[in-house]
Image (cartoon, rainbow, N blue to C red; front, side, top):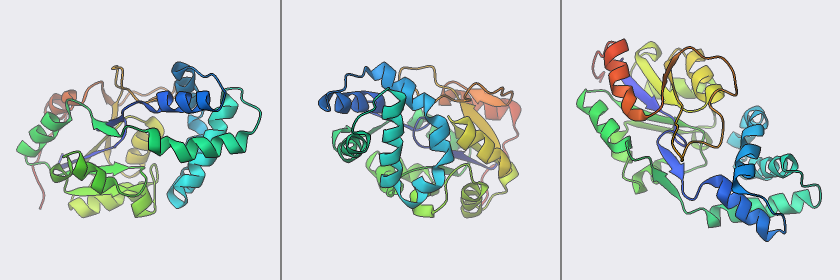
Length: 244
């Protein structure tokens, strides 16, 4: 291993309050009583739709979320005023979101990898401004490369976005680990690009609202906490140090 890439949301960062809580609160303002747990299940059941429309997310994130929120409402059994309600949720969501927080173990894991001479990158499907967000959260300095899909014009699982990262890092794909929490985007995408994928399946309260594998069999490398990445790399993969 010569470098390590990370996904963003669900891997390094979590939304606080969680998206299902914000969604349920906005539904309640629209006169639709939805429990946060039901909203979380709707996100998970809509994962196929989100995956299938990832190109729309890259081109037009706001339109993606308007259509996506309409899908979520349909999954929750809402039938009336879908377009208007989806537009309201889309417009209000960012205003209600408390912001993104860093998972507790992230700083120590990044420091441990840096101490081993491994350059780090973030490769994430994200709205414009990912690098600035990481700066505000105190993480930007740990990463040599930050690639968000909206800024790059390509999204996971397209192998091209992983190729942008390894090229910028100056390492071969086969010497680069990619860690992420979504099978479709992170595992299949990284594998197609020739990277070494590691699936993060958090058991904690602040796990992603999306399922990790969507019930598909997976026998590759997996961890339930980023701290497990260090012994995984040292025990199963040869660390060859930084590449300039």
